[in-house]
Image (cartoon, rainbow, N blue to C red; front, side, top):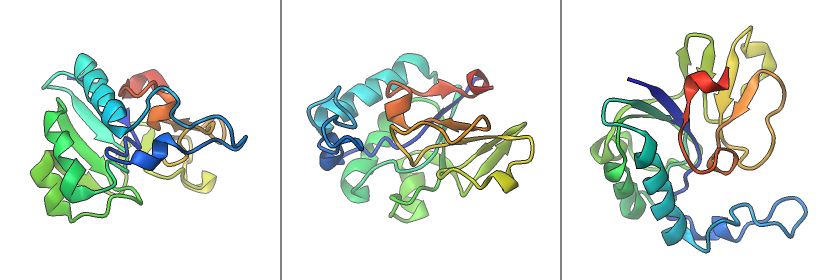
Length: 163
């Protein structure tokens, strides 16, 4: 069993493919034309590396319209756990019905703290904060690892590879 992390898939979020970076020119997700194309590729990349035995921590912002797009989670391999994000607006029972076995606000795994948003440095101690939320932006410092899909090639990454 391996442990993977990923954040900010935003399944079904059509406008995210139109958003630009701070330069107002470069698109945040230039690799894809729209959410149909991007969602399908993220599902394909996830299932290309994750096995049914693996654990995947999704660090929030799974989809934009819970009723319509949360169903994509059923197609993703692995034992899925959700770290609640600011765009995860549905009821916990909806996320569980879609395939998330556990839902939490944060999670400590050895010397990692998994969260949706970057945590304040004073709460980290010697731990590494694995987070999403800031999309294409660089992490804030040595103790931070941004696993928003735009930073990790839209593919879950092994937690241990972030050490």
